[in-house]
Image 1 (tube, rainbow, N blue to C red):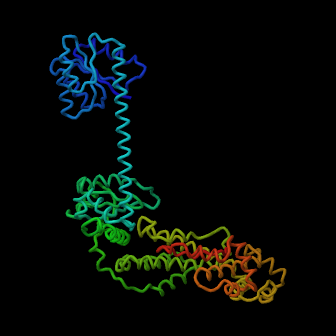
Image 2 (tube, rainbow, N blue to C red; image 1 turned 180 degrees about the horizontal axis):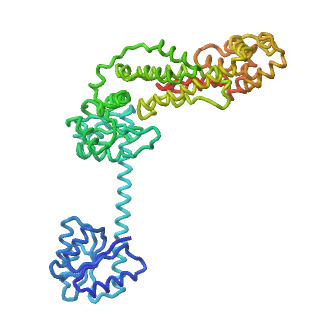
Image 3 (cartoon, rainbow, N blue to C red; image 1 turned 60 degrees about the vertical axis):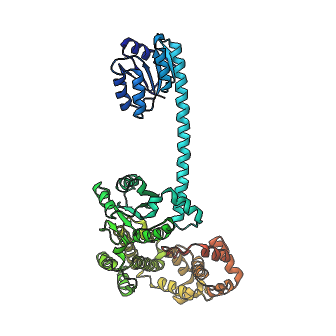
Length: 525
């Protein structure tokens, strides 16, 4: 669909042309009108108009002057000229200026329709070609950007590609910094999608040739002119009220230094979790952080001694003391991450004891495995405290529920200590001096599964850990967890895990270790 402008100093001609245009099978989007070239020029400046149908001779500014001026101003529109026989010389001049055709007065409806349809099709063809070319260009740019991003993240690249890519932004790669930006969002607040706003500010500060977006997710990465003051960009973002933390590397020279610069930027980005009040984190801010430390094991032990006491306020105080910012900001970010892992591992150990009694209740420890899944350290500590208080409640209920069931507790302890020996229900019931049938019934009622199934799960849980963490032969592992034969062990393992022990060992060792992976999943429920 196109917009058309009718220009003629005679109103009845303008009205007649508009009426005819309104009767054509293909209707324009809008039909504008003007009494002379000056009015028409103002219309072209104010509106998106694709076709102008104009008389040649008009007061103030004629059709030829209108065409020449619109071309000079870069106002892209096609022209159809209306002229009389005596104006044919002018019509030829108009065609030299780019007019698509001319119509003789008086204008016939059929001639107007044919001429407009011809120009309309030409406009559509041109727009389609332009759109296709733009799409191809966009895809090419996206491909180039993807290759650049992969190289930044460590993918191999030959010297020829580096040299060719560097030539596309010679001035930028001569001296640049990497900026990694993290928006400050609430944990429950969806992304504000302001990355384009941030890019716009970057273009304004550094210029179009001085800023290049390399990555949008999971965090925005920009390469910016390294010769400018690093504080200028954060100040401009703050002036626009864009709440974002910026990690900015030292100036770098040459595209070949991009992977190393990204590594430095990523380290700075991670440290921004420790310094939420620093709007622009630079290498000098973390240069003096201590690289050696020892985790506060005694304080951790004291904290978990409170588990099951129902004293939530003291647990909250313990978390605050362990993760006090004055302590965290003394050390490299690795200290904080190791401390997080240590807390999660201790929570897993406590949960493992009471897991058989939780039923459908469970802790969500997976949500605590990666600090950087959270907007900031405060949000992570809130989630950590919430799960620790839930563990405290579960443990408290567990102790209350089974305080009068010492026999059953002793039976479970006995199973866990003797699972590697020949063990059956009669032996355990004798150990706790209970009737065989009564013990069997109480065990299933309270544990949620029969004795044989529970013993199998205990043994296979230990076997799974041995398969994952040791190089013992499988036949030896079978004996170590209480199975009399290799065959009975593999059959039980396959029924529970839906795979052979050898397959499980290969599978678990193929998984990437991952810095944040502190999983201790078991099959014991």
